[in-house]
Amino acid sequence: MIALAILRRLLVALVTLAGVAIVVFVLLRVVPGDPIAMMISPGASQADIAALRAHYGLDGSLFSQFAVWVRYALRGDFGTSISLHRDVLALLGERLPATLELATAALEFAVIVGGAAAIAGAMARRTWAEPVIDAVNGLLLAIPDFVWALALVLVFGVVWPLLPLTGRVDPSVSAGMTTPFYFVESLLRLRFDVFFDLLKHLALPTLALGLPLAAVIARVLKGALNEAMAQDYVLLARLKGMSELRLVLQEALRNAIGPTLALTGVQFTFLIGGTVIIERIFAYPGIGNMAIEAVINRDLPLIQGLVLVFAVIFILVNIAVDFLVALFNPKLRHA
Amino acid sequence: MTDASASSFLAASGPSLASRRLRALLAEPKVIIGGGLILALIVIALFAPWIAPKNPLDQDLMLASLPPAGLAGAEPSYYFGTDDLGRDVLSRLIYGARIALIVAFVAASLAALAGTTLGLLAGWYRGWVDGLISRLVDIWMAFPPVLLSILLVAVLGAGVGSVIAAIAIIDWTRFCRVVRAETMAQAEADYVTAARAIGFPPFHILMREILPNVVPALLALVSLEMGIAVIVEAILSFVGLSVSSDTPTWGGMIAEGRQFIHQTWWVFAAPLAALFATVLAFNQLGDGLRRALDPVLRR
Image (cartoon, rainbow over all chains, first blue to last red):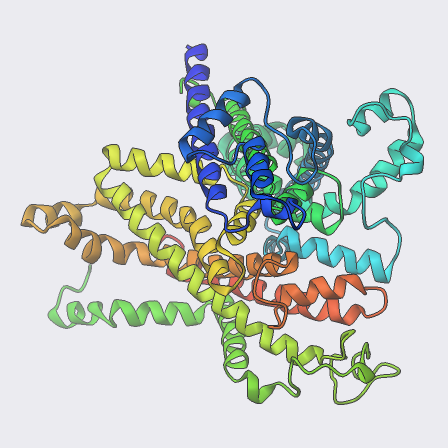
């Protein structure tokens, strides 16, 4: 039964991926800017231009181009980047870990901070603190990651130059790392200098991405907790003498997590989309930053590969969220 | 129901639905604050040529990089200081509001139009229509919005029109989902069944019966969307893909200010503050609208 559900899910995911690939493919071929024109030197002959075009597979009809692309993609060959002259898959593999580290760090931050705020808010039910928490939460909810990032640049760039504003790691410190997964590798190899340098550079982008998500989690979880706390079984536990904190954590949280997870999952996909501009602002070397460069340079193969990577991440996150929600709510398990 | 006399019955009908709703709207503080700020912004944008103290495009290298009025080394007539080319920050801020508001209103309206139409169709006809539209929404939402907007503007070429088109093309799904859910819920209601029994065509039912009940949720969403549109426009002009660099935009000012943030932080901070205030205003307005017009929350 579960296997069938998973299979159905994967099929839907494949259809969505195919749709995404087609849309981007068509969109890019309509682009007025010609990437070949950007690459050739002045005075190149028509034969040279034609040869270059054929080399990158940009001749031929839309269908044939797409068919060729699919055939190569299924073998794992996503072509060569027009602007960076390297294999697209290799480029993606280099940059993706950085973005994944950032996204996971932001998610952890958001869950911890948002969760703590929600629990505090639920415990402050019907006291003077609750409307204050609600008001602050409402205010923070309105601020998008873009504005947070810029505000953080202002505060930590001008007012308090505490943290680095750009980059992922100091190159002099990180020399000697063998994989692109700096975070895990530095911990495993006990290179704490690299680890702390990573954290310093991660701090601001993580804050910028994580704070909006934290605000959402705080709002939804607090609402769900309040609802759960009004139930009879909580009253029973309270009469048995359980402390407020234990009540919230042990009794209410389990039932409040379900709806929170669903919304958090959706917001997390927005977070991943937000890495595009946040990485740009902080010059963080992830796939988001590379995506903007690729679009500006009309690097078709790279754009195609990047959009697919984002789409795959989106789909995987959605599947994971559905799975987790079903895990916590037995009523939803058969679908 | 204790007094069943005719006068009490007539008194019970009271003021019309529209005036009741208007009264509820104006009683909600968020609507007043948010709406007031937006109105002020509209006035500023409309009367920019008369309000702005200087010409936003005038460069004066003798007066470049002046701090805001009140700080050491400032020129009193340049209230928010000047940028590295000697242009008045306040005037550029005021003119930047024009682009922000134009994009906000037009893009949000277009997205609402497209999304509502498709949402109504999907919610009413269900079946393969709903399947097709829902699948479309799923595929659409699998794209990271910022990336897609940058892509679209790169495809369509820079300019306000492309920015508006990009926002509308990306965000119609937001409206579609909400309207589809609302339509499906409303379609089960008795008054819709009655309308169908009378023999009204689907178009009439959708327009005259269901849509008016969807409008409150839609209004709140439109206000939210306007806030999002302002942000997306700022992001696009930050990356350099919006209007030409002559026309002042808040995002463009932020990008320029970012370069010299240590020397002239006011060029960065002023448009950021304006952006923040505008988005906050739209959000408060949308929140207030949702509360005031939601029949469940109304006491």
